[in-house]
Amino acid sequence: MVVEYRVSPKIDDQALSELHHRAFGSDSTAVVPWTARLTRYSLCWVTAEDESGLIGFVNVVGDGGVHAFVIDTTVLPARQGEGIGRRLIEVAVATARSLGCEWLHVDFEPDLAAFYLGTCGFRSTKAGLIRLAS
Ligand SMILES: CC(C)(COP(=O)(O)OP(=O)(O)OC[C@H]1O[C@@H](n2cnc3c(N)ncnc32)[C@H](O)[C@@H]1OP(=O)(O)O)[C@@H](O)C(=O)NCCC(=O)NCCS
Image (cartoon, rainbow, N blue to C red):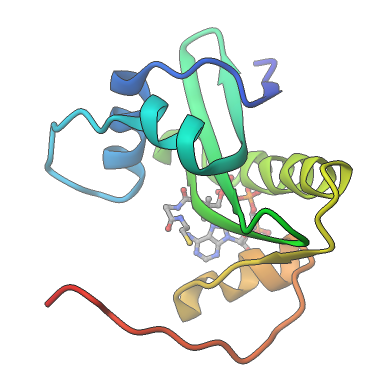
């Protein structure tokens, strides 16, 4: 199946919410206001679609300067392992660079090191995190 990758297309909030819930194994059916969030806070986002609809997504938020952050990388469970996640990140990298960013950050659980550091080419760094909600 041909997969089409697009940068910052119009988003169907319900379709992206369903993809996100399925990829992260959530039981929620809540529709997240993605369009409002992305248009207000994101530098860009990348989608992957085939004939069935949305099958992959990644969000890139920026600081208005040279830094950008990858979050919410998601591929439909049935389509994982086909290189779709790698291609989403490749397009995100090229887009962030073309928009003037010099650094692209990501953090992740240890089991995703093979994906981000191996497959996608991120360099390993030390990073810090504080959980603000209890
Ligand atoms: C992480 C994710 C986006 C990867 O997308 P993908 O399309 O499956 O990845 P690709 O096919 O491009 O990359 C494949 C390689 O990445 C690594 N990889 C991919 N998914 C992985 C996972 N869940 N755990 C560990 N390694 C993974 C493997 O090394 C794999 O190599 P292999 O095919 O030789 O085994 C996808 O698994 C996903 O949506 N996971 C659930 C949501 C999530 O945790 N997102 C990350 C938020 S930080």
